[in-house]
Length: 235
Image (tube, rainbow, N blue to C red):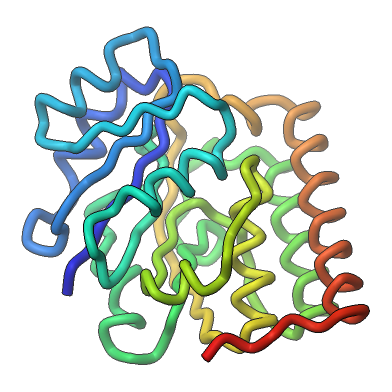
């Protein structure tokens, strides 16, 4: 099975080396670091450690993930992982197991079900994730606990979903379109630790509230869009 790992980065020089070093070499076919205008040497470090660096000057978490997905070399599975070392790349086998076993098309790493180090997730981020997960259960019937960034999906499924969100809404778009398309989404527990460096979004209450409002609105918009027009079930 060909596994491509996509890591969006912006000034992650303190952590990217540890992230790349912890990826299980026996499972990963290629690593794509999608860098957005880092000024601290992140792409140079990644390149020296064997990653293929893609430069994406346009900002946006979803845009970086889409660039990585488009640039992957004929993968069977694509993994998305943050470059801040808050998730542990060594837990990749946990994330891949439901897909390799034929039980899932998409897997989500839940930070709220696994071991969580003190201070890794502030209370407002935990609350926002639980609220979004509850809304998804009510509107879409999918029971999950978290919208964490450590996730994987069959490449053909990810392409069939026609993902288009360019901001942090991309993380929930996979879940919503995957559910509406009838694909199997399985959540697995993963550990989570305080990130190295400063968060671009969730490090402040204001940033978390803004992200939560956007994500909750997206969940509702997709629901009513589906009810009005319906989403064709991919073959």
